[in-house]
Image (cartoon, rainbow, N blue to C red):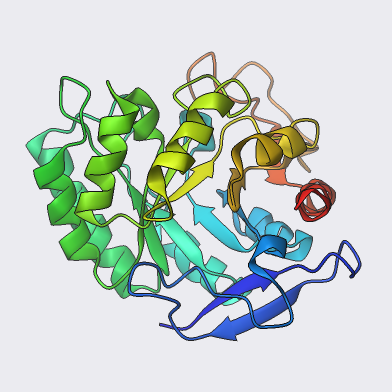
Length: 291
């Protein structure tokens, strides 16, 4: 599979995106492309933006994102998107699109029926153009569900797979990381088992040191323009994950404010959250100038 990874050079403009298209970098991960001789590894990074709409996907690419994590329901931490959303996003952007495989919100201990849904979703997303998948499962005692994850990875081949923030709910992150390496995950998304990547920075740094390049450790969770530089400098991460969203008012002129379509804690019916081009560009510039 051919993959495009945006490479940024310090001598260029903050909005210059030098897309380098190469064949599969390694058997481990077709989304990570090695820089050419003109750009050293120290000057390269990848920003992944989680999106739940076509508009957000387009904005993320315009802002310089190198990869998308495509979900539905970001309010619940991201669930499996529809096939329609995947297909239209794939028609609208050129950067890799990794699809979330998560059948519901809440914990990561899945029933047999939920596992069957996940199997079907892996098959469908793979056959409809996903460039990679994002998934995870735990046992009741907070360990990586090895047998189930092995089955999911086999079903996903040859697509690269990210273990998502189920990792932040494990009993022992050092042990869990070794499990993910042995299973063959390409990366793990983590906030360092804390409320955000900033608070979890020491754990993320230890995980990156432990990984020694065997698996990519990607900080995510609460990353903003205010804390990105500190997170990158403090961890040495080469990838990071963010949503970079802003509020956008609905275009509806008639509004029935007495009715909501979800629970009382749901997002306002007449307010939307979309990836913000300016925020994505700002994060890009911060990361580029940090490295």
